Image (cartoon, rainbow, N blue to C red; front, side, top):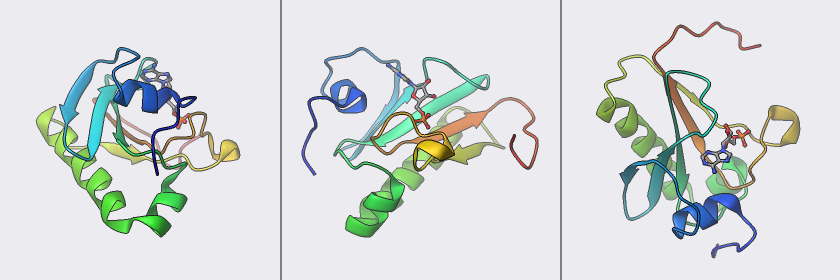
Length: 115
Ligand code: AMP
């Protein structure tokens, strides 16, 4: 899917909105969350616009896999032995930006189940 001019993360990918970028590949971009929920909190997004992981997995499972692989690489780059990956999917699951993104969080203890 092509870039969406109204999408916050498309605009970060395009360089129109600044972000603290920690990793970039041909397919994905990783940048720090502006409202971190853990000492390390990074978002990994595909450069292409896809609404959520359900849409992406159905339309391009290889790209979905690269998002996951790059999220794991971010954790390794940032020295996280233990980390949490979260992909909120749908508003009632907590998704607020409708461009698929993996949250990579670490540096503190997380409870389970999440609140
Ligand atoms: P979600 O609620 O799963 O859709 O996650 C969206 C995330 O994007 C939230 O954790 C926000 O703090 C984060 N966020 C919103 N605007 C920005 C921004 N300009 N740069 C980086 N992260 C952002």
